[in-house]
Image (tube, rainbow, N blue to C red; front, side, top):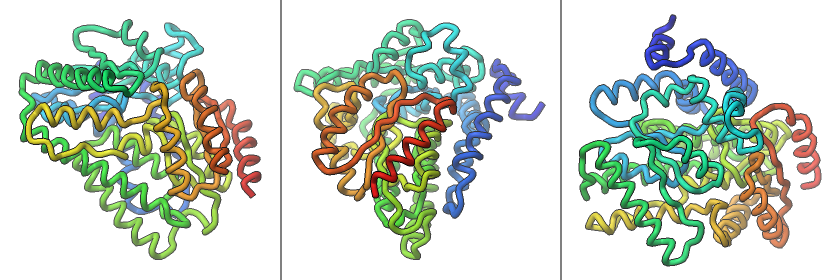
Length: 422
């Protein structure tokens, strides 16, 4: 058994089944991201982040726990990473993007629920998620009805649910600020450390630096042709949810510097004038590259992602002018409440975001990506389509899961959509 396999066995995982998952993920990677031509050299690091998600990163976290740090699992970009970092905890995203683990969740959960939830739970139920055994604490949130009811089943003393309001009125802002303060209390109880003003300011700086680097990457995709593919940009953003933040930012700065040179020299995976597409809607978490691959394999370039593995994760910074702890926590809460998830009603801010991004990135069309049974994004797609139509921008709604069964049908629809763009 390899050293990596030995570590997984010591964590209590089903190593043979985990190896099957790894092989399935590698095949998917090589068929999509790995099959691309003319990739930036600096992407080698981010490929390593994806490949090391169940390897080197796990070893790092095990060593960190041995040194006294706590590992906090999260399922959503609403969980304030700054607060966890301020008490030396390590926040880690847990969402699964593989069809391989879905059947293991369907033994307990209904088939007709979100594939992201089923993939994530299936990894735990099948004992192939290496993060489960090393988590000291887990944080859910109320952005989705399926998640809310799932948390009731999973809840124990090491599971906390953050109340994300469904509106953004004054009363909702105060509710969310209270939830953020409560999360601060939970992190202090977990680690035995107090959130101090100076340390919180430092963690805000770390996360803002990371967001600025991701913003820079996104700005560089405005070039025609863009110096990086949408698939590679997605891989970077998936890695952002898992990698150590300072190291991630340093390597993203190197990638951005290379992209500046590529743009200046006209180096790109695409020809000038390639149709420019925005993907809008549900997140594409690690392991899920299907829709991005189908779009770019059909001859288009994805130039911006309006999703939680896109602009929603990094678009807004935390204000750093606050001098006292209460003001810092309020600034953090206010920044996270600007994330325009479809759980909010009304959600006119998201419509504004979609139109603004489509204009700024000069897109020829928008693909609305909806995970199967994600009712909020599916219904909200009606308003998004109407807003885009009023702005003269064509859109295509795709409802799919993680399986490859509908790839042929989706490929045909995407190719027809691109032809309609002229």
